[in-house]
Length: 563
Image 1 (cartoon, one colour):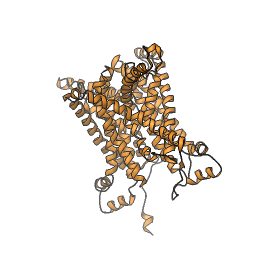
Image 2 (cartoon, helix red, strand yellow; image 1 turned 90 degrees about the horizontal axis):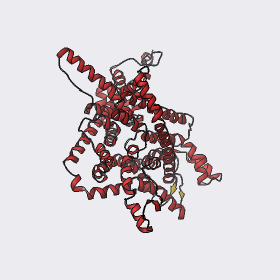
Image 3 (cartoon, one colour; image 1 turned 45 degrees about the vertical axis):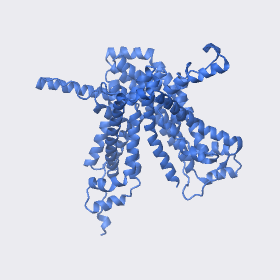
Image 4 (cartoon, helix red, strand yellow; image 1 turned 120 degrees about the horizontal axis):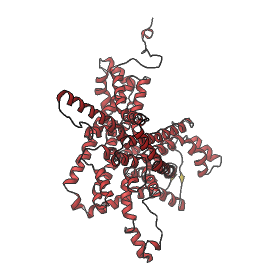
């Protein structure tokens, strides 16, 4: 008998599950913990259907504000979807397939608007374009207009203004994925279309665009999820959406059950969006040879075409980052002596502490989940990792509601038990604490770390695992001594991405943060709500500068991949 005959694979159950181990239990336990807020939202929405008071509140919301929430949310999704598609696909096609002055600069610079949160653009452009702002003041001076009745000027604080601003900061999602899709398309396919007499435009619409449709759909879905998650922009523009409704219902009206029901409806929106994106990818599977191809010949643009291409790539960057950045810098320098004070230091320390702690815990959990899936690739473990990755698709307001309800009940249970046993009131141990806030961040952003770590693990050959185990190393020791050093780049990338996203997060922070514990994002929102935009400039500029870190990192990786 050969040795291979005695080698047996782990036995699966009929459902495809691998034997239980410490790693698989850990993965499933972490996934259940991360999924707790989502479970709480769904259970809370349907757990009190027979309550007459809850029914009355829901009926009131359904007949008064719910139609406007649905209409505005759908309007944002349609408008932003069109905007990011036009900007992302056009710029990706131009820098990938065309040669014109500056295309190498635009190749990485088109990612820059991703560093600016939409609510920062909302505050800066409102001050810049309002009636007493520099734009309208200059127009009245030049043309001799005396009042607003003498001319028409678009209102930036509107649904249309929100759509434009979201499109400017979110189109890089589509740009990144569409650009990769265009680069990986088979040269033979594109050259065949050109040999058959197709013009560049016809090749784009009939060949390149259909082949890139799955990637474009994924990028658009990411942009729309970020749109539904936003709170600062729509609140400042007085555009009622589900996120503003959840915040007002929870904190303004004190109706937690109604807020939970609104959160469940928003969760349904997200589920439909994810289903549509996956359906689009399922219906568009294209297989093409991309290895060992010669470099494709770019379409060389000259004259007016080159100018049009340059403007197409430059305007989104200028409007999405450069102009608002310069406005913030000008306001910050004008108020620098008043803004750089002890309060700013406290706000920055709070933001840095929360971001650092979340990033450290996030990469640790992502490492456990990803390595556990590598060791035991059964259905239960794979499903658990997927569940733990759902948080990024869920708006921060929904996560906040899903955390506050079970945490509040747990605090009440502990307090009741302590009074009965020790005759001592413990109060609120977890509600409104840094622990609950960090947990909300982990639920929201753990998916980023998981995807990054998994991408790094796929580059490590399984033979290294076998060699380490043959030397007597346990799985844990293999992870710490073999995989962790090889994953240092991926872990650093994941940490930076989580760090920056936590710095910018607003909805969950507003609801869960401890009393008198503000962050840079919260203080910017508070200043802007009080029309103190000059005071908001320095913390807003700090958020913008920190937001540049992952963009620079991604741009470096793009350039390094081409070398």
